[in-house]
Length: 525
Image 1 (cartoon, rainbow, N blue to C red):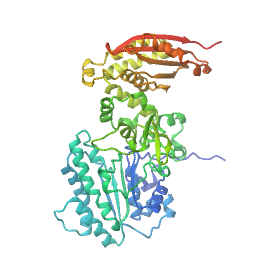
Image 2: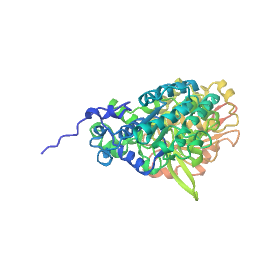
Image 3: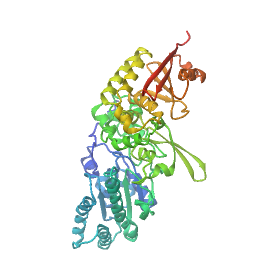
């Protein structure tokens, strides 16, 4: 007896409307309604931060349809049999996701357009009121008219600020205007059934959230780690018809790995475009160039090898403000780093370990960082192609000319503007980001200080071990000598592969490589 394979469906790329996705039963859908009911059962006012294109808008729209009682859309889903469909609630959904809001006037115009239809439906007369008072009156009117408390869903609550993050004065104006608006959500508590704000970033409690201290932040709640995104099980079951012809382990390596202290997830946008195009590419990364982030990391002289393992307290990664933007918080909240673990130092004092979620982010972010650290795109690409040829050929000595040309391509004017005379880690940062941008498997050993780093690259059945030094700080030849002295090769001899020990020495005077020594160990027998 033969069994038929599950039929392929439409890929819901770019769909943020629950009704559009569910009508006709033509699209794949990962059921998130159990999370929705869990939120409603356990509380009523929430905040959730997730990176862009993770399905936040679709989840909010799912809640909207649920509260409005549109049962037909939930046929076969968890909520169908577990929700009280006799109850319906008025819903106000506000979104700042469309377009760039460049001023407070733009913000008020956007709000005006979103509140007007609700006010007209309630028969509220137009008055010259502030946006805060209009929202407050609308909530009270809906409660009185419908006989049920009101649901307020805010999507991209922080986007008006992030749209202007490079202009601190304008961003501050946006923050204060939104702070005034959102204060309604606390003052109107008696009229509210449920509130959820979502966005990319979490601003500090003393600024935007000072009037919203009643919101429960579920961003780092392990129970809701997979509230947005696809789990391994989702990929293997819901999307099973799309898997033939694709390497399952490559899908994990490239797109899995996002975590908020619970179950790990894939970015939905990546997975859906992979299934459409059948090709591994940085789909998510390409939708938003992190120009501001790259500039911030360069200005702060961030040691890029640290990106693979960043240690930070919860306060550092969980919020920031217009005037105070820790790179760790920005990297985590925007999705370029994710949680790898946490350790309790003392009662209620946690240290978090952050790292790249997957190969897509590691490769793409480091490619962008190379440009931020002065390497022109064309020279970077040429050097990358030459490097891969040398690695395949086992030609370690040939790398010297490639890297010398790479550092020589950084314009003198770039150094003048960035004042990196004291930033010895610049050389190691460029070197590391260059290898990471090439998509190679890199293992960072122990970092002794920000002027040097031990790095292992595993490629083409060989092990490449690098040690960096700055000649103005140590005797010539110390780079390779340290490789020998510390026995870097020992842990890799069991692989039975050639091992290349490479000592690279830079000069901050010439701003380039002045020493390049190679020692090769071939497997015995």
